[in-house]
Every structure is written in structure tokens, then in C-alpha cells.
Length: 149
Image 1: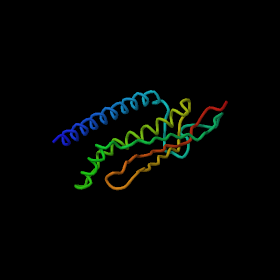
Image 2: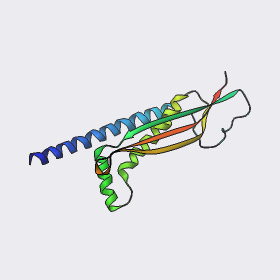
Image 3: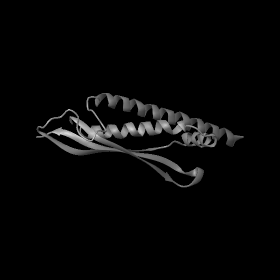
Image 4: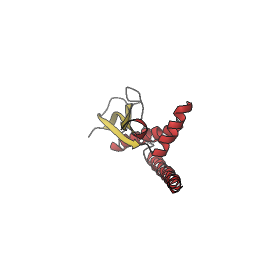
């Protein structure tokens, strides 16, 4: 009985701490997105609305690796049994994508725009089976258009 109580307590602590960490990360993302709101990011191959002038271009990138908490892995395992959307991982991918784009924008905050943006996602796992530790890596990269000089 003591073992069961300990498992329930540890699961509850893991769930609550995971939710708190996720909420704090989303708060940080929203605050930083507001600060970089004026820097446009597009997937177009060429810069938008920029005529010939005194500009230069630089490669910018931002990457992040975020680990899956154990509770989300348990939920995803249950959802895999029944099929459908694996909602436990959707917020993980959303946070990672937004964080990678923010890191890219923060690399050149005074750019006129960042164009030709691409996003790559990779799953990283250590171990096999149900004991595997999963993470997701997201890399965002593009071309920053800067004033020359």
C-alpha cells in the first residue's frame, strides 16, 4: 500500500511541476514575442517591400531542445492505444517551434526582416521501449536583412 501511495504522490508532483514549468515557459514566450513583434518573419524566398539600397544579408538561426515530461509520455502512450490526436505532444511542439523562432529573431533584433525562414524538427530519444526518454529539437533558420554599415 505504501508503494502505491508513493507512486501516486510522485505522479501528482510530476504532473503539477510539469504544468508549472510549461506555464512559465509559455509566459516567457508571450513576453518575448511582444518584444520582437515588429520584426517580420516570412517564408518567402525574397525580402518583401525592399528596393535596391544599402542593405546586407546574414544567416540567422535559433534552435531549442525540449524534453518530454514523464506524465506527457504516459498520456501519449494511452492515446496511441486508442488512436487520434496525441494532444500531450502538441503543446511541446508548439513551445519548441515558437522558442526556436524567438531565438532566431533575438540573434538579430535590429534586422529589417527575416525572410526565407525554414523550420526543421527532429525527435531525439534515448533508450528503447517504454523507458525511452524523449525530446524534440526544433531548428529555425532564415536570412536576416540588415542595414549596411
